[in-house]
Structure formats: structure tokens, C-alpha cells
Amino acid sequence: MLNMIFRVLGIILILGAIAMVAKKSFDSASTSVQGVKKVPLNKKLVAILGGLGLVSFLFSYSFTIIPTGYTGVRVTFGQVEEQTLNNGFNFKIPFIQEIVLVNNKQQDIKFNDNSISSETSERNTVMFQGITVTYQINPQKSAWIYANVTNYEAGLVSESLVASAIKTTSKTLSPNDCTNRSIIEPKAKDNIQKSLDEKYGEGVVYVNKVVINDASFDAEYDEKIAKKQQAQIDYETQQIENKKNIEKAEADAAVTKTNAQAKADAKVIEAQAEADANKAISDSIDENVLRNKYYERWDGKLPTTIVGNDAATSILISPDSQSPSSGSKGKADTTPAPTPTPTPTPAPDGNT
Image (cartoon, rainbow, N blue to C red; front, side, top):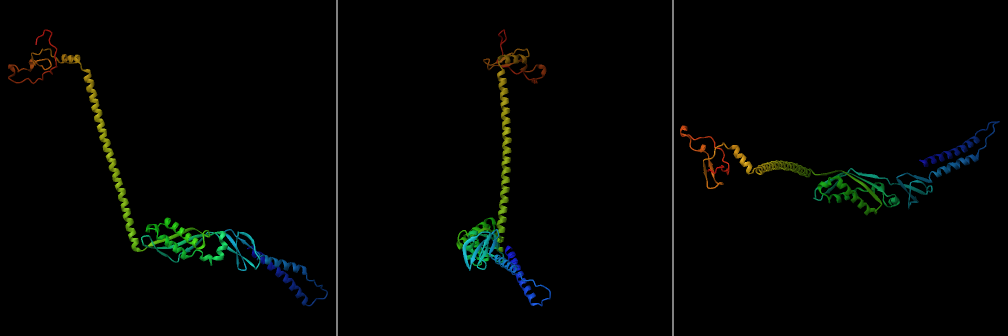
């Protein structure tokens, strides 16, 4: 832009000087009017205008402003200098030197017209389409790129190089991985970078990203994949159902065990309580208690018969336990006899 301003300004000044000379020549050639004094040509002004115009015009060809994101390559009579020019104001010799701009920004090259046919590790045919490669030229290598790569703007990252790298990548991957962009794209990026390093040398071109919009198989393989995926879904669903059943069975078993344990604990507690009660009763019974119980239940009648040889095995028979009286007509007395008390104390008179 600045070059154009100086160029236009120079042309205007030169044209102004030429116009002044032309006007003076026209006035000199015309018929002079009596009494009118001719104005002489101001040669100094013409020289100044012409000189400024020429300097401005030449100056417009003596510099180049390199914008941000670009570097410059100086060419002198077709000879490329090895030194790369940084962005900013850079001088050159008018009409002898040229400064060529090289784009060092990230650039996208897209391959949308043709698809890339390849194979997976299982020898399944796969088609890749809509490939975009984002790359960047190393600013320090701009002069080398300009001097050694023909039509570098269009052919630096060629379609054949990208296709070869993607085919190399897909042959190492399974069908599922070939359609997984998070797996195939980074591997394709690494292989493209490797191919560029082998072609131009390391550190010349950087591959920043690779995008593969579509990877597809033939219809027969797609059908197989669909069946396999459905089988996997069915398997996972069954696994979930089995897990639920197992968890339910475990929960039921835990409940049953808890209930059984509670019942067992209750029985233990009940048995322990009964044992404690029996022990308390047993501990509370002695000879005096038994004697008192005997006296409480005794009806005041002494036993008439003692069966047995000693006190421990003797059985006391009261008169009421004998045969009924004649008035009872032979019917047995159903009144229960009092419970015999072990080891009764003999009467004071010593009668048996």
C-alpha cells in the first residue's frame, strides 16, 4: 500500500513538471499580444518537481513491507539469498532485487474431489473422503522452500503423499479403529509428518492436524458390522440382566440369613432366660422351702402306708387313694390325690 502511494505521488510530480514545460512551449508558439509581458519558465521549479517525482517513483520500488505471519526471500537477478527476511520494513535495489513473500501461517489443504481407497489390518476395503491437512512452513526455512520446491504453494503437501501416508496408517488398524477418528487421525498425522521429513528434511514443514471426515466400508461389510454391534449390545444387555439377578439373589440370601440369625439369636436369648430362671428357682429351693411347700399342701391327715425300704424310695399312700366305700357302688374316686412330697418328716411319736 505504501509503495503504491509513493509511486502515484512520483507520477503526479513528474506529470506536473512535464505540464509546466508543455504549457510554456505552447505559450511561446502562440501569437504574442501587444502590451502583454511574457512570464519566463521557472526552470528551477520544474526541476524540483521532476526530481521529486522521479525520486518518489524510484523509492516506491526500493522497499517491501513484510506483514505479520510472513517472511521474505530476497532475489537478486534470479539468485535466491539464503538469509530469510523478517516481517517489517526491508530495503531492496529497485529493478534489480525482488523480495518474495512466503506464508508462514497455518494453512489448510483439502482433498475433497477424490477418495482414497485402502485396506485395514484384516484386509477389509475402506474408503476415506473429505481429508484436510493443516500444515505450516518453518519461517527459518522459507528461503530453502522457495529455492528448492517448485510451485510450493500448491504442491508442498501433495495429494499422493497424503494418500500414501493414510494407506500406511489404515493397514495397521482394525476396522473399528479405522472409523474411530480419535485413533486414525493422530496416526495419519504422524505418518504424513514422517513422509514430509523424508522428502524435505526435518524441521522444514510442520503438520499440525489431519481431519478425515468420512471412512466407509462396502455394503456387505457394513451389514456384518451392524450384526456384530447388535450382538455386542445383546450381550451387554444380558450381562446387565445377569448382574441384576445375581445382586437380587445375594440380597435375598442376605435377608434370609439375617432373619435366620435373628431367630437363632431369639431362641438363644429365650433359652438363656429359661436357664437363668431355672437356675434362680433351683438356687432358691432348699430343705426348708420343700418342708414349707409340704405343709402348705398337707391336708392334716397322716399317711397310712409307706411302700419302700428306705425314705428315699418310699411311696406314701393316703387313705383317700384306696378303694371307694360301699356307698360308691364300686366307682373309683376321680379326685386327684395330693402330690407326694419326697422324704416326709416322721411324726413325733415314731409311728409308721
